[in-house]
Every structure is written in C-alpha cells, then in structure tokens.
Image (cartoon, rainbow, N blue to C red; front, side, top):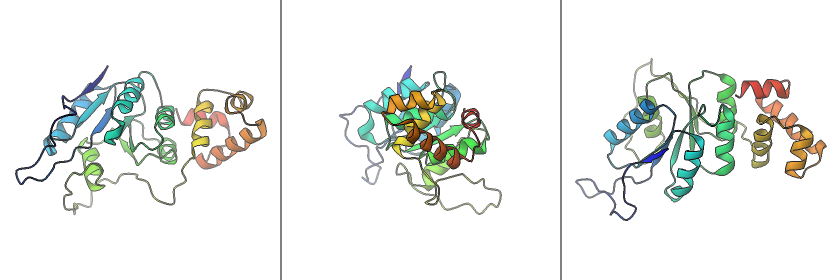
Amino acid sequence: MAYATPLSPHAAPLRSEAGVPLPTRGILVVDDHELVRLGLRALLLAETGSVPVYEARCLADALHLYALHAASHHLVLLDLDLPDSQGLDTLVRFRRAFPSSPVIVLSGKDSHALMHGAMALGAQAFLPKTGHLGEVLRYVRDNDLIGLPARPPTTSSSAPTTPARTESQPQLNARQVEILDWLLAGKSNKEIAQLSHLTEGTVKNHVSTLLLLFGMRSRAQLISSLR
C-alpha cells in the first residue's frame, strides 16, 4: 500500500510567519520498514511542516506514486531491498521508468560495488541505513534538494561523510541501464538482442562496457555483486 500526507493539490501555498512561501516540493520515501518511513517523515515535518512526504513500501507502489505526483519534482529516497525488487535492480527499474528522477539510495548493505553501481546509475548519493536517519536529512539540507534552510557546517572531525556524485564519476546512458536491467533478470546476449533490436555483437560490446565500468570480470560476478 502507498501512503501520502493529506495535502490538497488545490490548497494555497503554505507561508511562514514572515509571509515567505515555504517549500512545496515533496519527498517520496520508499522503504518496506514502517519505522524507517515514520522516522524520516517525523524528521522532515519537524523541520518545515510543509514538505509533502509520500510513502511506499514496495517498488510497484513507488512507481505508481511517482507517476501521480511527478509534476512536483519529488526527491526519492529509495531502499534497494523491497518485497518486489532486490538490489540494484530496484534502482535500474525506477530509473528506466523515470530517467530524470532525483534519487538518493538507502541501503542496509555496506557494499562498495552497490555504491559504485548506484552512482553509475545516476543516484545523487548512497546513504547507509546503518547510520542515523538524521544524516539523510543533513544531506538533503546541505545540497538544497527541497529548499530546506542550510545550517552552518559542523566543525566536528567525526562527522560522517556521504558518498555523493562527482563530475568525474561515470554514469550509464539509457541504453546501458536497459541492458543492465535485462542482465540482472538473467537474460542471455541473444535474448537481450531480440528485446533491444540490436545485434548480438552490439549487445556483447555493451556488456563488456558494463563489466569495465563496474570493475567486474564476468557477468555472473556483476549480477551477484549488484543484487
């Protein structure tokens, strides 16, 4: 089931006491753990009280909700391990449906391969769920993703760092994302060629490029490391 805060699309924009419009862009939280969703909702609402927070517990609900509210330019907080999708395939399927969607990946696994793969697939950041939920809010605020007021940077040397996108990081194009999706589904080069209307040689070249980008030696290693 998908959830959303009861915010009328016809309501007047919320304003602060000074009459300044408050942020209206929303966040879609996709996680099958209710406590995680409730925790993020509470943090966000405590900060502004005006950011619509939509919730989905599975990928199907997330795709449905994002399609309904795409005009609001939601930031998506996406857990990779959901009841109907596992591993990096979750991000692949979401990005195929909404290529321009701003996505931050939440993961319960401390995997360099997953982090590298998520960034290559266009994720804005890779945040471990093992940390404090406040770190998610800190990243959103520091990068001005939904208009939250920035706070002065911490001077603590123990402040955790967040793997985030840089210009030098390779990013998969739409065709590579599509082929990676089929690879993770266990399709052979011949099957992918038929689905994509490409030659097997072209598919093989795409697969070789994906292996190189992810630093893998074989497609089996690629599939196992990204799930």
